[in-house]
Length: 540
Image (cartoon, rainbow, N blue to C red):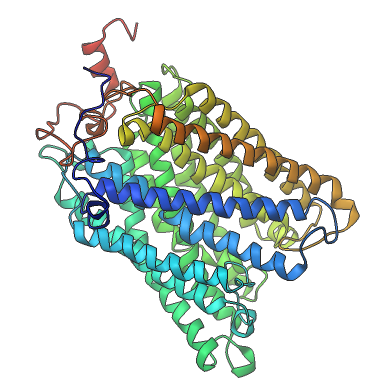
């Protein structure tokens, strides 16, 4: 009976398209988010390959500079606002959070559904911007250009403004859910570390997102009414916009990476069947990162016009981000030490995360150092660092999480051979694409440029070949995941032998998540106790 898909589960009960449109089930809402963010991920990824293909040779190949700027902006805006910010909290978080704490649903199911429709409404304005020609300002919408550009900046701003409400709704729901709906006996220090990470993320979502919303409203008013806040021609200050924008957008970096770190904590312990090393340190480091994230926005403006004292202070504070991040990496590595590591696909993405995020974090220290930042500011070095943290970090963690919880979400397994093959291809393609850009940036290649000098041709071409390899890896992944939905083998309730409440229910879970209230009999990572009791020969 173990590897049989139950006849009734949340995917088929109740039936009909209306039951999905009006669902209050957190799992269905999570699946709807998941489908949307993966669509936008593949779409924006295709735009990135188009951009890299144009950069294969210096000069114009198949698009002019104006088209390049618009596609470049769309790639960034879609990836940031429609994919990476909602990806883990709204999609995976929505699905697994109540299961992990033994709850039937989130605290406010109707607010949860509203956040989904707000997301769709915001995405509509983003698509409207696309079909009306797209914006050409870059995803940061820097003034004064964004106040005067005649491209579809206003609709893209409106999209980002609306999407912020979706993020706030999700954050409020998660905070209240974690406080109020934990199963009896599940204390804070028996929570999975994924839950701690989602809680810290929710605090940033609720506290920082309104700043961006106000900034975007001011920019919209500037464009439509010329009120003169950011435009120097009307007495405004464009640097003020940067302060407002990065006060949100740097914490937003941690909205993107903190949930990914939560996933990695889960995968490392469960896939090595070893008690997590330094539980408290990992839990509190999430809050350390959230706190410091509000104090470092000024490192984006070392060259934009702020006092030398301010620049020194922001540089000093930036180094503090490395401490809680380093605590996590150290504890993850110590957890792996002497663990029974299963090198299946989720662990392959976990190891990719550890390597790539460490490189991204260390190069962030370079950018936090004033003298180095002056040299590499606005070069491809920044592009490479950003992608090592966001894609090498968040996306690798997301892919690991998808492959780990996929059997629970759909009750079926994917093809392990093709999954591990795709993971290796993605790792190779990623490094070909972006490590090359560290070298390009160090040599002085500016970012966001449509063309370049002949001396950079070889490195640009190699980076483009890497993007094609990377695209092949994602294409393979998309094919085997869709195939698994149709012909995948039944996964069973707990194919990984993992601890945690979500693995105690059926795959897929029933509508009410559990048939009986889960009981707390051990911590989420107590493999040292549970495995010895269940399988005394396994740990010898």
